[in-house]
Length: 316
Image (tube, rainbow, N blue to C red):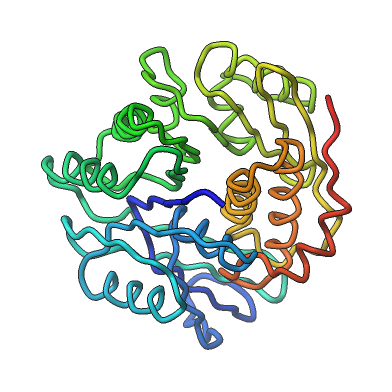
């Protein structure tokens, strides 16, 4: 397996709980909370570890919350590389209303980055990579971090012959997929909402989504483009073809971490040199397994192994 480094620029301590009804104006008595270190890249590392792989984890962690996250990650066997250059690391809250089954997710914005932090972070990540390795850049950007940071990092890593997998959103995604995107990542993944936003219209079918993913590859945005369509699974496109893997029909307990579980399983399979359709199946099976777990928990290996045969990839 090739070396994998995950990058989380805006991590969060993910707190999850349940309550008997979410109503305004009352004190809501919640269950004992569960706390997990979170943020895109951290969750990707956690998913890779759950599935029997190993990834080094780079995260910008600061303050008491950052220290708590670092302690949890280290105690659970993660190879953690930290950078401290901003204010207190953020937290997030996920609450399930037991009466309706609805899940409410509250995401705090994260610390403002001083102007000098981004160049230091890019330099540190460069120092931690070697030719032939894989870097997964996943999650949102903190306030004060310019949207071109991910594109700048990808360009530096491409020059070092490092393959990159990018899963981001908002202005950062628009820059990566925009006319001034610069060097393309190896893999660019997004969900259906983000794809609709980039396309400027709803992508109403698998065929439309596959056409859009193929257009990203044709424009040189990425070598491999992946679009997730929730219960319909995910579509993957390259210059050679495009494939679809349908999500398994499972009970949905929590959607937190499903996308990160997809990226973790996909990256692990990709690092092992598996064919891309198989990598896609791994990702979709892992995402399906993740929605079965409570709160901020990720995919369970037993569920993944059971669901994998149910998520074959076929050409579309």
